Length: 365
Image 1 (cartoon, helix red, strand yellow):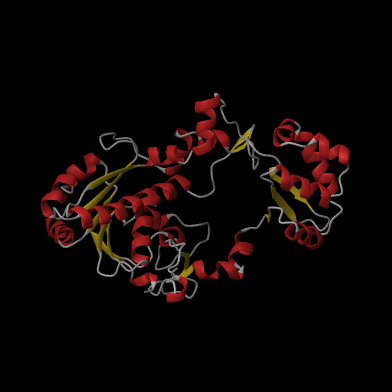
Image 2 (tube, rainbow, N blue to C red):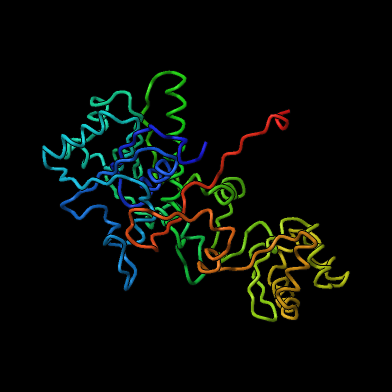
């Protein structure tokens, strides 16, 4: 079975805008679900339609940003205050399996599309409600707000130059939570016959992604500070060195054994190996370590250093820009072309990062 047929026959109504909800809808559409996206026509539709780069022409007069999260959907421009349009929306809800909505409670009540209304229209539909904080909390929840409120911005950039993440990562994380809620809902419905309502919080999604930084505080009272690309627990992990031909290489050393291999590649002395023998010593002596790494690597041509690192299985990465990444042949399977975009360059990143493989009979044991 091809991925685009996995959810064939599943009907989804998307009452969501901006990024988190639409990304989840795109994921389901890529897997074959029929996704109907309801947009507010009088307001010009999803606000991201207007989020264009400087000088951007747009695809069908909508931004690349909008298209990044709305692949493969049937889009209906509706006047949510019109009884005729509302009846049309209700008809889609009555006939669907899943509803994804990010209407704030007060807005949903005003428009007559609350969770209770959806439930009365279709008691068999799985409902996933995206909230900024809690369902009753009226505060709006843009990604930037969540990055600040959940501590991410306090950890990004450098001491005197805070930064946000360059992708709306909290929305992306929340989209994954929505997908997980949908898939869990489908499983529960198959097992019990009941369709449930799931509440997904942008704020809680952000907290769920704090992982080691949150636990560093909870267990060790360590308040993470902005460190650029560096890691608070591992060194050299995130250190960037530059080769003789000006290629930036990021190191990702995760063990003492890997560091020993790196030091031998760089032809460091036994004294240096002893000085930086353990990860904790390297954390304590990070400034000296970085200076020595920069000094050693600047004598290597990139192709020579990369060859040695790969041969010894030392983790590293070339620091690439978007052109580098999306020109790489290994990225090609993640690029989609939207057949309704109307332009040859209507290309988007896939929401699906897995494939399906069936075991042959002689491989099943």
